[in-house]
Image (tube, rainbow, N blue to C red; front, side):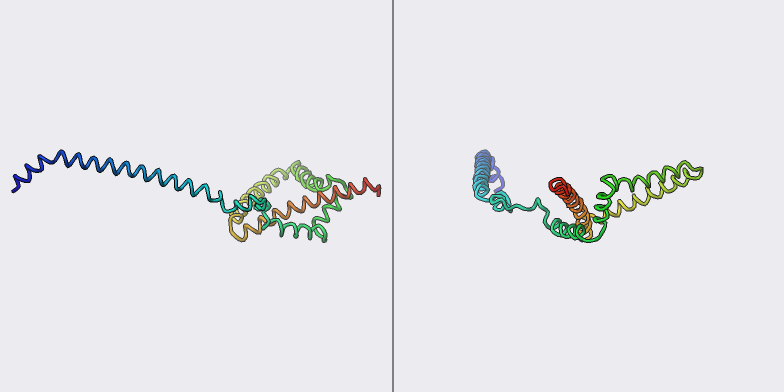
Length: 189
């Protein structure tokens, strides 16, 4: 029986291999055709879909994400309250109004000149270098802490809100200064 099967296999082996090759080539061609059909269907679906979740808003001109409203609305309110209340912003405005635009810079320069005078004293250079090392170490710790807090969910939002509020305070202050200068120039009062 084995000899008969072996003889039959030897006779039909070439036909079986050829048939298997035909089936494999056919399957490969069918697979390639299926990929082409799938790509065409995907392209057709993609052509009918909007390009993104905000496509309708972009078509109507309603994409307001660039305004960062979740930061700017509270920041403008806080900045407006800072300018129309009594606080550091009014102090800076009064200082600029009475002493000139360079008055805030003068306060910083006063401390720089004081540090420079201390360096000229015999014990001043050692004191100044110790203070400089202390300031460097503290600023490094503060910077790393702020960077870590900036990435935190709620604390990061509050820090970004503070930064945006300070920017709005500067912008509102500049607009107020220009507005007052323009009114003074127009009215002469």
